[in-house]
Length: 126
Image (cartoon, rainbow, N blue to C red; front, side, top):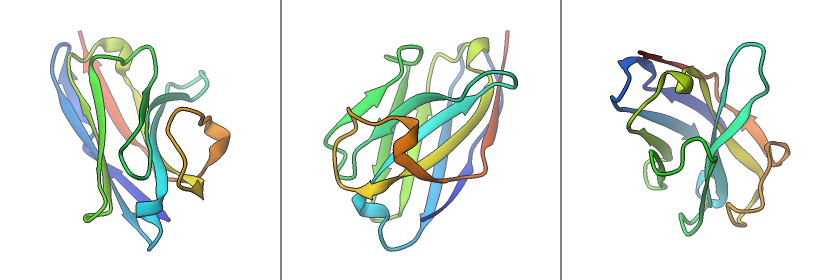
Protein backbone atom coordinates (compact mmCIF):
# COMPACT_ATOMS: atom_id res chain seq x y z
CA UNK A 1 0.00 0.00 0.00
CA UNK A 2 1.35 3.41 -0.97
CA UNK A 3 0.08 6.40 0.97
CA UNK A 4 -0.12 10.13 0.29
CA UNK A 5 -1.08 12.45 3.13
CA UNK A 6 -2.41 15.96 2.60
CA UNK A 7 -4.36 18.70 4.30
CA UNK A 8 -1.83 20.11 6.70
CA UNK A 9 -1.28 23.81 7.13
CA UNK A 10 -1.27 26.75 9.51
CA UNK A 11 -4.28 27.27 11.74
CA UNK A 12 -5.02 29.32 14.83
CA UNK A 13 -5.64 27.68 18.17
CA UNK A 14 -9.25 26.58 18.43
CA UNK A 15 -9.52 26.04 14.72
CA UNK A 16 -10.00 22.91 12.66
CA UNK A 17 -8.26 20.99 9.91
CA UNK A 18 -9.03 17.79 8.07
CA UNK A 19 -6.20 15.59 6.94
CA UNK A 20 -6.60 13.09 4.14
CA UNK A 21 -4.55 10.06 3.26
CA UNK A 22 -5.05 8.57 -0.18
CA UNK A 23 -3.95 4.99 -0.68
CA UNK A 24 -3.11 2.99 -3.74
CA UNK A 25 -3.20 -0.77 -3.78
CA UNK A 26 -5.87 -3.41 -3.70
CA UNK A 27 -5.56 -4.29 -0.02
CA UNK A 28 -6.38 -0.90 1.51
CA UNK A 29 -9.88 -1.97 2.48
CA UNK A 30 -8.62 -4.91 4.54
CA UNK A 31 -5.94 -3.05 6.52
CA UNK A 32 -6.16 -1.00 9.65
CA UNK A 33 -5.10 2.61 9.21
CA UNK A 34 -3.50 4.99 11.62
CA UNK A 35 -2.47 8.58 12.03
CA UNK A 36 0.71 9.34 13.92
CA UNK A 37 2.54 12.57 14.65
CA UNK A 38 6.06 13.58 15.45
CA UNK A 39 7.71 16.70 16.76
CA UNK A 40 11.45 17.13 16.09
CA UNK A 41 13.43 15.65 18.94
CA UNK A 42 10.53 13.59 20.24
CA UNK A 43 9.28 10.09 19.56
CA UNK A 44 6.47 9.52 17.11
CA UNK A 45 3.14 9.03 18.87
CA UNK A 46 -0.14 7.42 17.96
CA UNK A 47 -2.89 9.89 17.22
CA UNK A 48 -5.70 7.61 16.06
CA UNK A 49 -6.27 4.17 14.57
CA UNK A 50 -9.24 2.76 12.71
CA UNK A 51 -9.90 -0.87 11.92
CA UNK A 52 -10.31 -2.11 8.35
CA UNK A 53 -14.11 -2.18 8.71
CA UNK A 54 -14.39 1.08 10.73
CA UNK A 55 -15.89 -1.00 13.52
CA UNK A 56 -13.28 -0.02 16.09
CA UNK A 57 -11.23 3.11 16.68
CA UNK A 58 -8.53 4.11 19.11
CA UNK A 59 -7.39 7.60 20.09
CA UNK A 60 -4.36 8.82 21.91
CA UNK A 61 -5.16 10.50 25.22
CA UNK A 62 -4.00 13.89 23.95
CA UNK A 63 -6.61 14.03 21.19
CA UNK A 64 -9.62 12.21 22.63
CA UNK A 65 -12.79 14.18 22.17
CA UNK A 66 -11.19 16.56 19.66
CA UNK A 67 -10.06 14.39 16.74
CA UNK A 68 -12.05 11.90 14.68
CA UNK A 69 -10.64 9.27 12.37
CA UNK A 70 -12.74 7.87 9.55
CA UNK A 71 -12.26 6.04 6.30
CA UNK A 72 -13.94 5.58 2.95
CA UNK A 73 -12.91 2.25 1.51
CA UNK A 74 -14.61 3.02 -1.78
CA UNK A 75 -12.28 6.00 -2.18
CA UNK A 76 -9.22 4.31 -0.64
CA UNK A 77 -8.93 7.25 1.75
CA UNK A 78 -8.63 7.74 5.49
CA UNK A 79 -9.35 11.05 7.17
CA UNK A 80 -8.46 12.79 10.39
CA UNK A 81 -10.81 15.57 11.43
CA UNK A 82 -9.05 17.77 13.96
CA UNK A 83 -11.11 20.23 15.99
CA UNK A 84 -10.27 22.55 18.88
CA UNK A 85 -6.65 22.52 17.83
CA UNK A 86 -4.00 23.50 20.35
CA UNK A 87 -0.43 24.72 19.84
CA UNK A 88 0.78 21.40 21.24
CA UNK A 89 -0.85 19.65 18.28
CA UNK A 90 1.84 21.17 16.06
CA UNK A 91 3.70 18.28 14.43
CA UNK A 92 4.27 16.38 11.23
CA UNK A 93 1.37 14.00 10.80
CA UNK A 94 1.84 10.64 9.13
CA UNK A 95 -0.65 8.09 7.94
CA UNK A 96 0.17 4.42 7.94
CA UNK A 97 -1.32 1.04 7.09
CA UNK A 98 -1.07 -2.11 9.14
CA UNK A 99 1.17 -4.92 8.00
CA UNK A 100 -1.47 -7.56 8.60
CA UNK A 101 -5.00 -7.50 7.28
CA UNK A 102 -8.17 -7.30 9.36
CA UNK A 103 -8.07 -7.09 13.17
CA UNK A 104 -9.22 -4.36 15.52
CA UNK A 105 -7.88 -0.91 16.31
CA UNK A 106 -7.46 -1.56 20.02
CA UNK A 107 -4.40 -3.79 20.11
CA UNK A 108 -2.12 -1.94 17.71
CA UNK A 109 1.23 -0.29 18.28
CA UNK A 110 3.52 1.49 15.86
CA UNK A 111 5.28 -1.81 15.18
CA UNK A 112 2.10 -3.14 13.56
CA UNK A 113 2.28 -0.55 10.78
CA UNK A 114 4.46 -1.17 7.76
CA UNK A 115 3.46 1.31 5.07
CA UNK A 116 3.95 5.00 5.76
CA UNK A 117 3.03 8.18 3.96
CA UNK A 118 5.38 11.12 3.59
CA UNK A 119 3.88 13.30 6.33
CA UNK A 120 2.04 16.59 6.32
CA UNK A 121 2.91 19.49 8.60
CA UNK A 122 0.29 20.93 10.92
CA UNK A 123 1.15 24.18 12.68
CA UNK A 124 -1.18 25.61 15.31
CA UNK A 125 -0.49 29.18 16.34
CA UNK A 126 -1.45 30.56 19.72
